[in-house]
Length: 192
Image 1 (cartoon, rainbow, N blue to C red):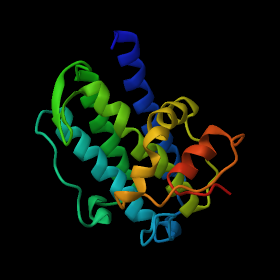
Image 2 (tube, rainbow, N blue to C red):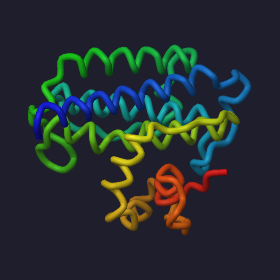
Image 3 (cartoon, one colour):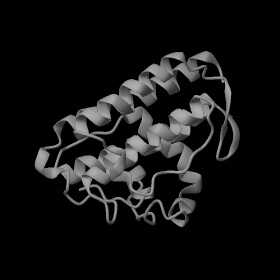
């Protein structure tokens, strides 16, 4: 990949994390235990899952290699949710500021570039930001460029996402639906 593409991937990733911050900062204190679109998870579970995901990405980017996700996602939230998320974003920002996008790192799928890790991993904070917003009753518009890039990447293999157990089966949706609605539908989410 050329430097322009690599830089765009890292910038896109940080924009998605910033969008997540906007939602986290707006979640009312009494909504952290509200049910989310992720079956069996509250708003706090979703945030913990996003935090744990960032810790997994940090492990890859720092050369420590892949690690399994936490069995209790809410346990990744230490202290106040907004503070725990702010600490996570600060750590990721520091890591990304020094990361070489072309460096190859060990992943669950063999060696890949840092850029590839971020291009793939953006799906988690992107979609789970929507989940947080739904659980908290907050309107959200996802980053359009990240939505388009993710939709293009996953559309050919969307049927495999449900078989992992991590996503609900894809929902039918009109071809003229917005890219955001199509992405959400591919991952088993129905936008209001």
